Length: 343
Image (cartoon, rainbow, N blue to C red; front, top):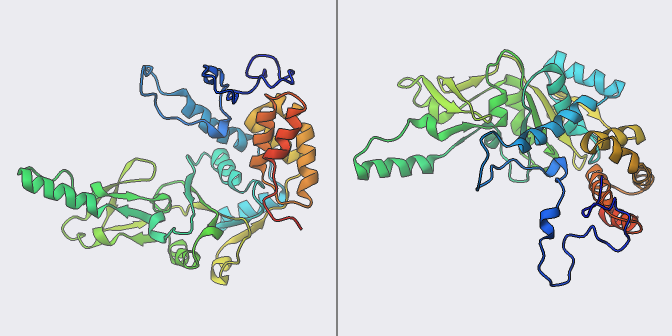
């Protein structure tokens, strides 16, 4: 891989820089290489759009596929995943950032042919209903008012304003289980883990807005998290195959015993050299893994006493592959900064 000026990153003068800080306008932005796979977005271009689908979408999905293909779980991971599949129980995976918690969900979905992983990233404001469904009452009211003022029929029924969330979509009665990743549950408020209990135990939930209309409209078409349309009967969703649910946690809080009792618990340790090299190879290729091996070793050495994330290592290897020494070493230290306070 060459640097931004095609010099293989050997010039210490810093020609890899795009923004040069000289105050002189130039067209260096046109020389940017392809972005890292995890920062490759798939929005269609606004001008001169080609006839086919944008290839960046395939590249972005490809990053997950490579990780899934190359993921090699430990014997304990293998046993706990299969226990969760056999028992139809959620898998609670705890570990430091970058230990492969999310990758596990993609690896299972890929190997078993279970389709796209449904992803519910948790934040402090997340509520159970966010994962189950959204009802846009304001949009429906606005459309009703516009139709009344213009004398035209209201476009669509109530189902046009309901969209199932990741959890709601995972609980649809499909022949094969879907894979649901509930990411970083420890970021939620105190109520969400308890609120999940009943839904996880019963495998069903009701949509009150549709249940009230069940006698008059027993079959209502709604949108799923995948963007597909499905029919909800009598205002309730009940699974047929219980989804494979992966709950991830960075270990920042304790969960209530009732939730722990209903989950299979897997704790991942810090990744070793082999696993980190596999992650780098999956994201950046064999050459980057070879050239960046020294950074992998430095990362492992520092991680013994500092909290670091694998994302930082990937950023450092990708960027320093374009830079010249001694810039490379300095950039790596700037990008891989401890996430905890010095002891």
